[in-house]
Image (cartoon, rainbow, N blue to C red; front, side, top):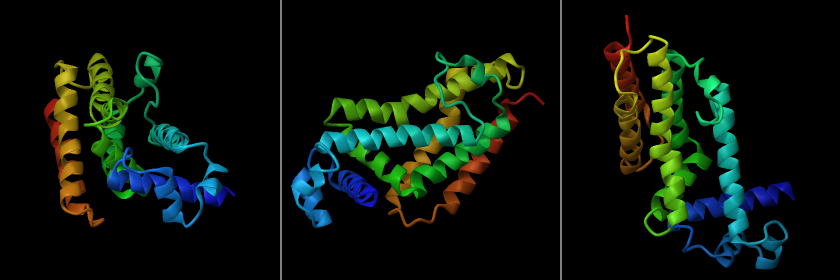
Length: 207
């Protein structure tokens, strides 16, 4: 039963990423899986239940990844002490791993594409897109950089502007990767991102 529920979830997410959440019906998902709607309803109440499960998994994965890279998984307002232990090295490594995650991981890639498609026609999706991929990461980096400035690691500059300068290439490279056709070959982009983070450190870290 667990395998069937997982297949439903991943198939739905793939269809949402390809056609958009609004365009995909429970019937479409069931037909893609070769099952009846009744059989699907034994695992999920409705399409919204599937979507909620997708979002919950993404939040859980995001938190687990942050902890694995010794980064805070909480917002600054919730747990400011967790930001005090951040290092430039961990931020650099985490940024590169995030690029790989958003482009290589099947679940993350489909999730991101679903939000990208739906942000223009669904206010909830637009907010999720902002929280997960645009404004949320920038605010996260701003809080990290503010703490590093306080600790005397970074030069005394506007942390918000530093966050934009640091994060913008990551966002751009993800989009460039998509335009390339998502061939799974992202080595060139990883190298560009690595060079960017190195240059950022050289420019803004106090020697």
